[in-house]
Image (cartoon, rainbow, N blue to C red; front, side, top):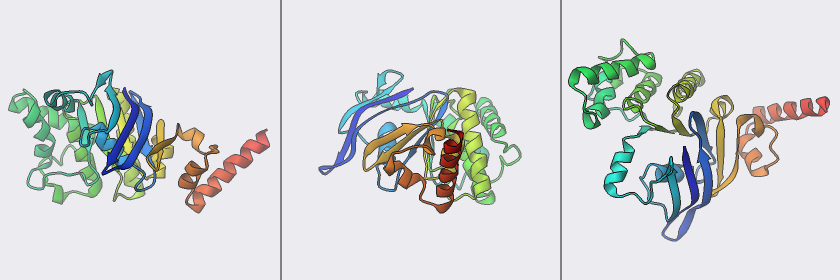
Length: 258
């Protein structure tokens, strides 16, 4: 579990995060949503240590990440997996070598053990048979699955995903969502996903945090979104005509049942 307490972040006097208080739960897909420039990416970068908070606490199972020494933070990051928006694979390495990379850097396994662990991770994301290919030889969806395999290679307790469905078609996005959700449950990880994808919100949003102009405006689950009376949230969620129609249908159904 990750607890965020009174978190603030400013750049040159401009307050970007304003007193954020929230909890990201174990074994759940925790989603951070919000408009571009709302502060959700800054929040994630504070969580993983790329930014230093101006004030506040970030507690990893009770351990204050903000107050850790440099060496302690390096050790702490070994418990984190990260999936970047662009997949961020090494073009000169094979799929297998990409997945092995964190094992080569941080594990004490011998070569045979590292290869086996990497193959196990590729099997988990249904990519056995692609291990000798290079990133440029596989599709965007496969690249994202390689990135997931690499992120779980060290069996992290915390998994961070920055727009994992960016650039993918809707069908492939659903595959990635289902994979992230099932892995989260299987390994009881604390998974945090930055996303604009409303299919992700409705499909795997077990704990959703809505950030608006640097503040936490709303927190809940996907089943509550359709009935929310928070105007800032509904303006964001129901930006498309299709979603507006869905909300009206839910409201009408609720009224008829009442």
